[in-house]
Image: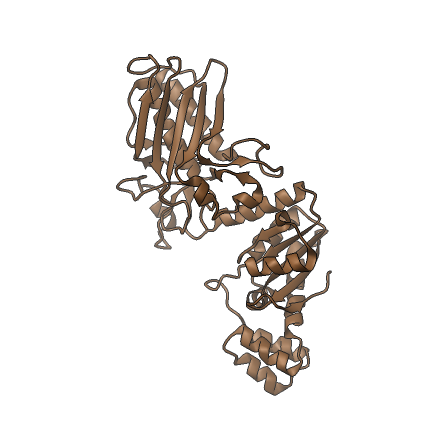
Length: 395
């Protein structure tokens, strides 16, 4: 959730000011946080200011894409003026600043990580050059919004850093030609918990963010990773991809279809995110695979399969069982079952193919979301052990 592939923050007292962001989610009672890109921009701004003035602004204030102006406390700083005295762009001048990422109330794996920016003066005309430091990944596969070989610093954070370098240069008389190396303490280890290795981003995290703000439980980074997964699969020439709710369903589709890793989409609960993105960026075939109970929610028309946002509808399952030949006694038993899996077992014992019926309904709901996009769909339902308990035809 949150920025699953980014980095560092602390509470309002020791990290970024809460001004302007808490009101954004006042109605939820949840505290927003800051993206890795915002943290890197703050660190870059502080470091370049120190190069030109000899002093680090602390806290350092930046302007986000939508106009908010948060302030970030510095956790670390160092300055080597390269013979420029108390400030100025002397040859070899370099400064480093770092802030701790505060993800607010979002369960972000990068919450509390230290994001550093090291800024080095370059010859006039060089522009702004980005480098990946320790803990920041490098792009190794096509299909992402960055070229192969580039540091995994996404386009919006790059633009934010360029804009702030230009503002600092204008204010203090600098040239604005700098190399920015972004690093994240322990980022390579943290990245193992993200999609980055599967997407071909190796060596660390991605520096993410489009607004600078992490909205708690928006799961925007997970959804963004789904989209990048589709992009990478398409760039690799994959014509068949699978959206899976977890590792068990991934193993199932690999066993059934022999799909390579870059054709597997870690869908989690976000069936709608997969379907809507594939609608705009089609592949020839999409397999949706997951637990029977979760996919029964898709069959009933839910696109978010999380237990907090949708529930298994036993009445819906009972009506499906009736269409599959269940007698009224079994229909009543399914409607009163404790769990979706219990309802499935009742039908299995009676020879009613509830698993196949759910898979077919889920496929049909998926096709509705695809709205005629040239994508063939099939659905596979599994139990907790990974046994296939329902399967639709491809349509």
